[in-house]
Image (cartoon, rainbow, N blue to C red; front, side, top):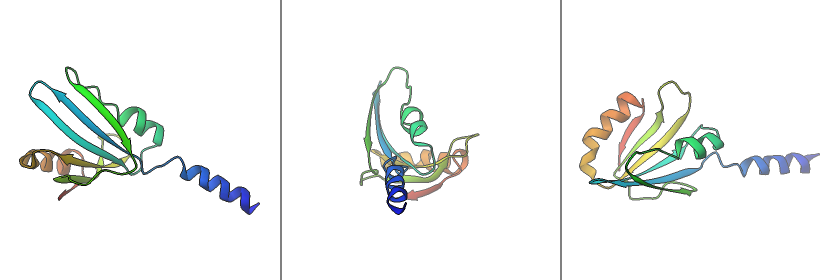
Length: 117
């Protein structure tokens, strides 16, 4: 019985609630790279919804990773989406001066905690 319980736990661990995705979008004078690290979003919703942005007129590349890479200039920890109970951490890469816009958005809209890196 213990072996079966251990196998079930290992199977659940394989569903990876700690997934992350790196989203790189490029368009007309726009080049943005963020990484979303899942905290409490059901895996299928995270992979098929949260990590699949529809950005009109932009080329979007999504890469799934175990955790967000180093090198971010800021992080919005425990970010939420309006009307949803789920949380994620969002890492920002690129132009550090963008923090002046991202920090207030993180704290006010996403109800997250801004962490400069």
